[in-house]
Image (cartoon, rainbow, N blue to C red; front, side):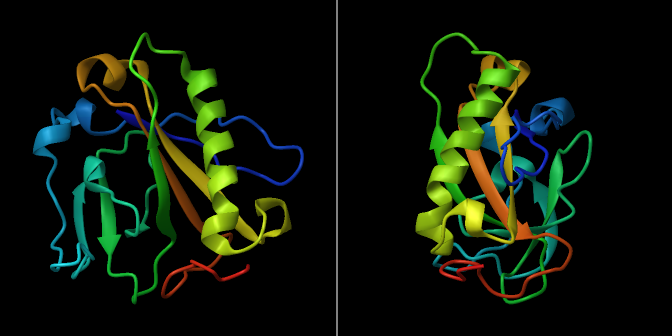
Length: 167
């Protein structure tokens, strides 16, 4: 079950500390996560709550700030939203490396991917990052290895994508 980090801050970067448990707590597995409505290209077409495992790169979200996150509020990206998923990667199979190491790898990955997405280095940006990571429970029970990077403006919703925004 991916976990959520606190926003990654400017220098010095802090390791993510807040863990948010996702779909395995609700009995949903990776294979049976409910999906938001999507068009042929995969873009979300209507605001709806759906399973957190359904988040894909390019999705826009609201309210993913819960201690036990099993569902998220998906929104079409042309509507105001808090966060946009911009990068994903899987950790290698093996034993769970521990919450701190997983969070550090997620932070490293998301910061490295940020420049290609936003067009400027994260340290020069006014945007904030959040990452969703596997927990020990999801690693073994759901075979979850995904690191998922989310970006948003600090105190205001965004309409449209932040890709190449240079913010």
